Image (tube, rainbow, N blue to C red):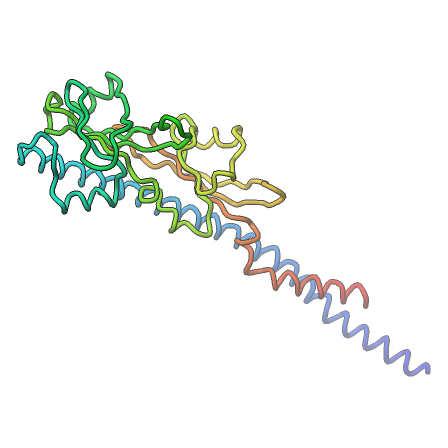
Length: 279
């Protein structure tokens, strides 16, 4: 019996001598891996914000090119904006919900969709368009809460007296929400007004969202519905390309999703800790 007790003690001593360093190393590794994954997630979100911002500018440039090409076609046709070619109509259909010519006296000639609503321009906006800038203006449409982006160009470049070409951009094209998964997306303007949210029911507290336009980029963590989110934000210099407000892109994902790679390792560490405790 004595010999058995001694043998058991020696065996337990060897097990502890082996498991304790492994456990300590495992805990340190878990902490280090967690920090690395957090840094990698922030870096990945930063790249995603940058890539999304570049894509947004490209989509706006493409829409502008389509609108200006139609303006040239109307000018050459000499039909006063009543007709456009089928090819140009198909191009507009992919990017705009409504397109119309607005004459100098305010008359509206619809080219695409229903000309039920078009934005009224301020004097400053009219002057900027008159200097051949393309205006992009967010407007809440009458009778809805939907924020829409409108694009306005001169019908004839440098000749605003000939009228304007106005189009309402399709949200699904401009915001490209199909390619943001697994992230959540928010877009705000310079005054922290929410332009778009991939999930309208998922909202930032106002005291948090107003901080984003104060700097060009950064990362953050945020507790929502008992879930910690890791996020990144970046300002898109829309103003450099158009007569428009700069936009801030915000992308975020649950921390549990970002750290999914170490969930099994975490379970192993917990089991090992229990074994050490029971020993």
